[in-house]
Amino acid sequence: MPSASLSGQVLQAYWLQLETRIEAGKASHTSARLALRAASALLFATDQEGQRLPQQGDVDSYLQAVPGQAASVTGFINFLNRQYATTLAPRVNEKRARNRRKEMLARTMMQMAKCAEQGDEWRERWIVTAMEYFHDKKVTKKALRWQAIESSGDGVRVTMGDESYWLPIA
Image (tube, rainbow, N blue to C red; front, side):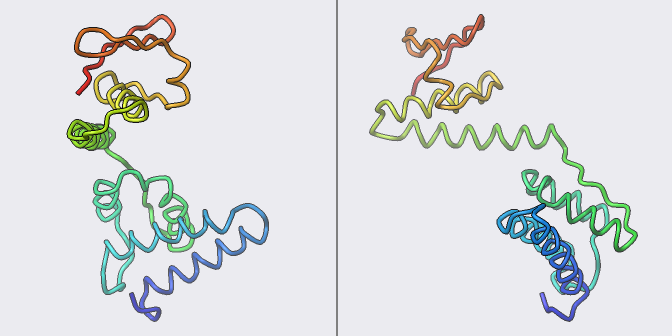
């Protein structure tokens, strides 16, 4: 995107705002870089020539494709609303985001099922992934180490508090 374009000028102005926040100790270089990257991606998805600002449909399309970027792009959207009198809002279709996450978990489990080496590390990763896929329960490997896990037929039973969850093992 050419720096003389509208998008280039907007990114430059956004960078100046981020730089001020860094100097004030309100943001880190890493968070500023991630925010600038999300802003650039949104502008590029809006218009590769960089000649127009995003409209709500552009923001919706961008977040539909990459719902995980909602937090990163929110600061930029707020900047556009303040500096360029836009009325944009970062909206994510939660149902669609959940479905995309479920598809990604299914692909991960399919790849894991093909894995020849299925040791303790594999088993932990499988249980973490399967808990989210089958029971919509996010659990970390660290938290999993404190739970009761026992073999149960062709799967495992994970007990967390008063709840018991059965998971198949590939």
